[in-house]
Image 1 (cartoon, one colour):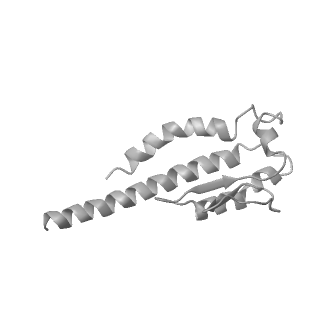
Image 2 (image 1 turned 90 degrees about the horizontal axis):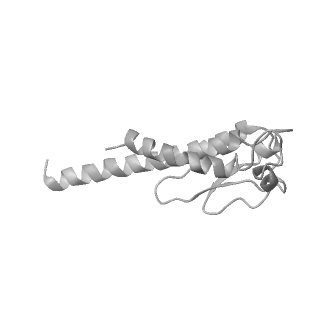
Length: 129
């Protein structure tokens, strides 16, 4: 194999590894956000929507986390893609601020963003070329 072919093969493997890492981290973060959303009737967990290109603009009529998690796994983007994890319920920000007795303030988004920093380093190690 020539040096050029070796370099092309490495670039291919590196790109695939980076894509897997980005998807892994996105799914980990999104799953944690969904699962730490306080649950009463399940609308708050069900309303997390995963899109690429633009954030979701509306509420949806989905209850529970199963559909939100499945959508996250299906729609999480990789290299060069911005993945939006959006919840448009009017009270979601209050839940983030600790409105529910089930979760401390900033447990959903902010807390998981802090935690994910550690997971990024682990995902990079796991997907190293």
